[in-house]
Image 1: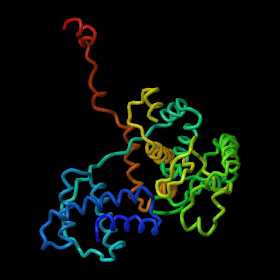
Image 2: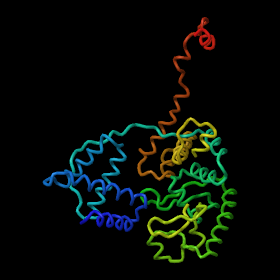
Image 3: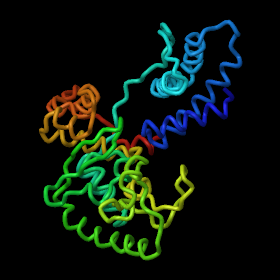
Image 4: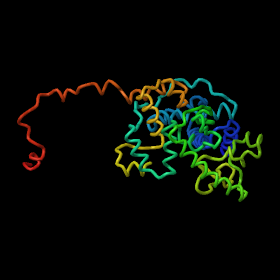
Length: 325
């Protein structure tokens, strides 16, 4: 099978398996790189040896998560596309996984950040922080996913294609009601202009052909202008750093920082780790436990040894040292 044909089969299989467009592009890129690596391998090497040598080639120059991503793409190729599952590839050099704590914002920092943002982005940031949403989950929200009366958000097809329910901040109920009025104007304008229907996954589009034109399926955060669907070519509507710089936050702020802050501040306020795990949609509680290391409660009760030193009477003020220099 030629490389172009194989990559096209990878795309088709991804769509049949309902994988995201991001996963589709990621897998095709890794498989293309792996195909180039195979050309350099000796003809008598087995598939497993080729996979192992490729992973070891990546180990010194990529992170553990990147190396795992490459492995997942290759396993997908052999198992789901070629229907020739790999055997045990044996031991191989793994990229070092550094122990990093996530960046998070304390409540006062979060309030300053939100206050510095324009109204539209602020609402999205408030939802991401107040509900613990990933960026992709936030942008994929539809009108029907928001239950204002019960103060709940249903996340559809989250990471791992899993649904879950998380909390909707009660403080946003009034703001969201006004937001619904604004996007209803956009919805009515699209329908009056006979715009293409809102994107639905293939199986839903076939089962409910008119659903893409119905209000409950409309995006919560439609783009200000149309964009092109990368898969179909149709023109559709899709739906911090500036604020962080404006208020002088000395931290690297991304959309995921809001989710990290949601988890850390919930745990700091007394929520159980299993509750936070459920709201975040983590498979394992071990994934959630990293946030416990962000808030070592005992640290606030410890007296630093520097604070126990006797006060010195002959300390020269720093400004005087500068003048002397």
